[in-house]
Length: 102
Image (cartoon, rainbow, N blue to C red; front, top):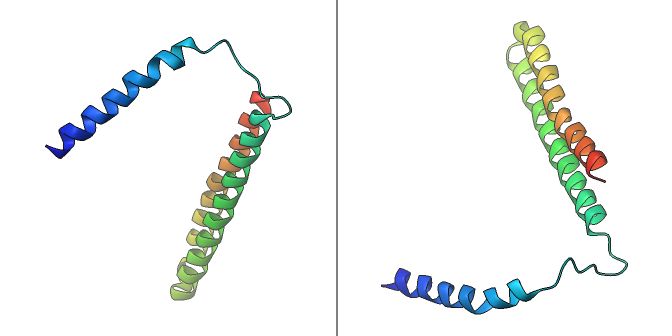
């Protein structure tokens, strides 16, 4: 019953807002605000922040693994470098997408 009421209310809202959305003119531009640049900077900041967090976790896990098993240090180091490359690629791809989009 509660789901039906929520669906009904959402339907009423969509039906009441739809005519105004379809009546809107062309592509209104807000003067002085470049939303593409703002969103690109926000996306790059998010990618860089999470990349830094992920890289620190990879390094910590690799150091812990090497401390527990020094004999496997070479294999752990190789896997860590490969993981760091994949993580850093995220930031480079984000930067490339921003460059191509702008």
